[in-house]
Image (cartoon, rainbow, N blue to C red; front, top):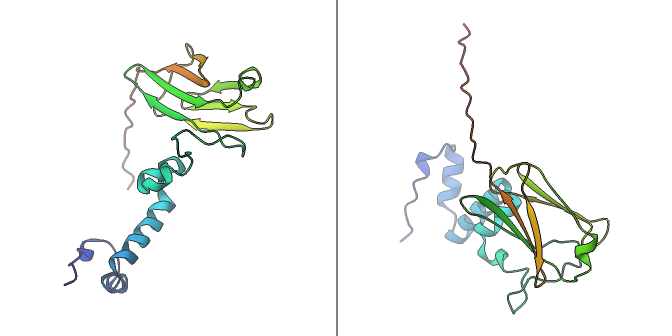
Length: 161
């Protein structure tokens, strides 16, 4: 027995409804995955497909070498700070890298190659000052204070006749 799907509540036309009810569950899954892939930000696609989360890891669970210009990083936040951790393969990279940040992005330049530039989106708005970066045990850790001063401005709506 095929499951009954609630396609009549979605804003699709009748042809789309008929097409979807005739699809096999695997085809529906592939269709939904394809649609979601078009709308999801690049850094969220691993949430949709968990296998993608682990494709850049070695069997030991460590990130692959950054030899292809890809910068492996992990980003997380606490109540007061945003942390970005970047595994550094070679200690001399620390001498050549440059780190900048805006209110919502961290920019890392010159690693692994001098012409490389990596932009990491931060999960929260951060302050302009007060960031620190430390390097220990082949791990670069950037700590940026969060900006907790949320200001809201009301927008008046004008009716036009």
